[in-house]
Length: 130
Image 1 (tube, rainbow, N blue to C red):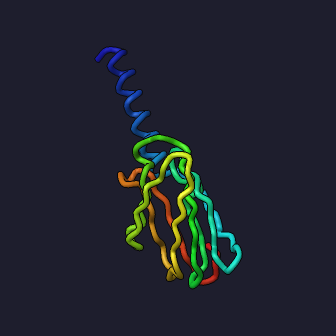
Image 2: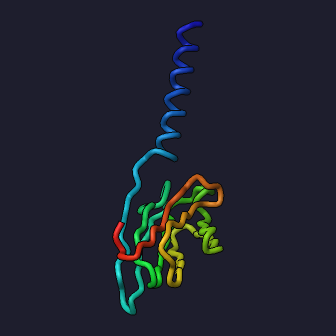
Image 3: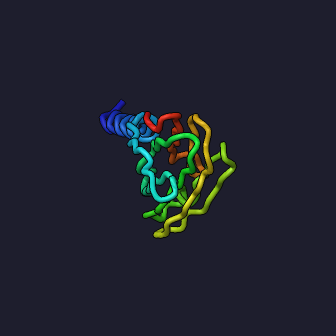
């Protein structure tokens, strides 16, 4: 094998390693839901190359409001889905979309884009702590 083949192979392996790290191994940014008027728990989620935060912790038995603000035009981020709650919403660029979840039970609920590449999780606990 020539040097160029080795360099191309090495570059391809580096790209594959980065993709695996970015989509499956990178750390989660955790945010505790903030209680606002009326006992509603609220979290603002920025959508740009992923969800920020991508791990939301809320307390069971109280409604949760997630405000998704999409700051990009990538096709993958134009929808967010919560399969456990049968919720799917279009996220227009530059707009905030509100998703209310009424009195969730304790558990872990994943959310993702329609392609499954952008992922996040809503963790509902009995005491509102991780």
